[in-house]
Amino acid sequence: MSDLTKKAVDVIRKVGLKPTAQRVETLEFLYSNKNYQSIDTIFNSLLENYKVFSKATIHSTLEIFVEKGIVSKFYGLNGEARIDVSGSNHTHFICEKCGLIDKIKTYNVDDDITRKSLDYEITSKETTYKGLCNKCKDER
Image: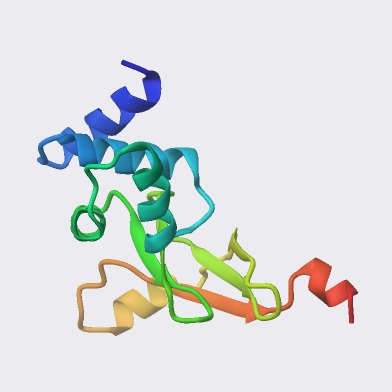
């Protein structure tokens, strides 16, 4: 068993799921391709190697992974769902010209103030900045 397979199996078991072939292969693919894959890209890539996958299986596997906190889902410029396997809440930047998606570091000074001022239990936060990446900005 490769290190990547072992990591995928361990993560899947840790959240109380059975490490089926489809779950393990899907998570291995995401670990190997960390650049915000669309569900169609994930499905088509896995289908090349594993003919037993169906789009419904991939979709339900990803939804379970989101629910269990293994991956997160966010939406790009065209509204297409993207899967992120980084495992932590973070901020995204999306280039409005070329569609580049990047993880960016932000300084959330007001997070504690926001949490204390609301009478809600906040479990996660999503922030997305949109604009022009350096390459597209330089092309103007």
